[in-house]
Length: 122
Ligand code: SF4
Image (cartoon, rainbow, N blue to C red; front, side):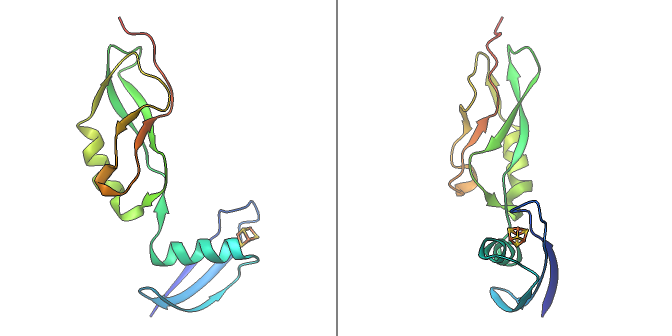
């Protein structure tokens, strides 16, 4: 049996939610004040998800790197693998905000997109 204290980040109240269980089985939960928090804590306990953020190299840009993020949540346990994929990616300026630099990264269904645009190719 595992016990975890999870701070809910769904709203600014930041309830501390205590979850006890094993694998995908939750035995006890306490401390949440709403269903959104309950759902958040369940996901955090069973399979935490995160928005991936990083940078990739850019050729002909004003800066040597450009910030990127996933366009949806990805499993937290794939973040390190995503970093390895991103490390070998290089894009070219000009580039627009929201352009896909890696589609369906690691078969997660998430695309890695630019969070800003650079139009200063030279
Ligand atoms: S459990 Fe509900 S009230 Fe508490 S922090 Fe999460 S969303 Fe906010």
